[in-house]
Image (tube, rainbow, N blue to C red; front, side, top):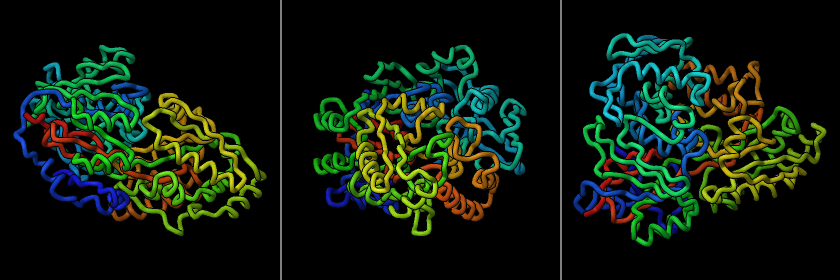
Length: 526
């Protein structure tokens, strides 16, 4: 069962954002649209207005790992196993699996799975995919470092052996980004070709990509699922401006669905009769730290910045109250922990910030914050502007550096940004995964810790602990330790997107992970 769809009344936007209401329904309008009062019609093209196209890495699942990339690859490719809307592991390409012991897993590959060109998926494809995604050239390797060996035991069984107990492995392999690919396709295409071409087992196949205009997916005629897509195709129209997307939806002349980050736009559309679905609150405004040199190499300066931040004021002034304070694991994640008065360096304390700067001998440091200038990220700009004013009260000069998102992402991946870079977070399949690019020494973007840092040891303990109660205790301790050392700065978190649709489609339901998998069961209304 999917996450219930619910409305955003104009007077209740803030309440609708609260994670505690995630299972509530607003009633008749959403329910009628979800079930569909009109008969589903086979065929046709669903037009979905979206904000960005895949960026660095394109639709190569092992190189294009950003949220914008996963929006498309998650519809074309499939993981070995998956999760339902409640977070329970379920079969996907593997029809079953067994954890033999703390370091050994077997996966039974289902019969009859084919790629969108009609070729059969084999255990060799699975072995190749797992080895490629954990390889040195893959951006997915961070969360698969414990895999020691992947072997095909027979024509239907794959064994994965880890070098140490890894409690995150099954959750990680359920993430849509950890896709199973065709070995023949992947080896016969160049890295550049794979950014704009794809061959997966999912319900949709790439048909056309017109740069910065649209991406069209056709129904995969070879899809193994019991119910394939109802529609013939999906056309994702790339419209960066929120108002323009709303206008396209209002015109009712071709656009069937759209998604938004601006709750003001959403509440207006709902008042006009459109249906609203909300994803989980997992979009954290996260600022990564370059502590390799400069003022941020000193932990006292990092602590001063955190103390100078008035996170609730950021939410109130920049987001109109429509967000929540969060630690590294976003509060919309089932494992998320909300900060409190005891969280180190989270309480707004300008005088405390000034004192720390004086101790560091950096009473008036200048810090550069790089952020995305694209229209799709326009709602993040008020936050950085308010943050600049807040830090100035403590004597910190924040220089704002706006760049295209592709450039921001490249600098983040390569670890070449100055001081701070704003990279909004996305849902991760395991709580430990949120710390991977913060606490893994050796990665280009990790500069605030070393292999000897206590939080690195605790992070590894979190990854190797299977008992859920023990994991929760370790996570709470780790969050405090990261907040104390200020290995990363989190401003706040909110929903990834609000999805809005009218009466030209029926059967669509949102999913909490923002995969848009509900498009498979969506029909054009005849």
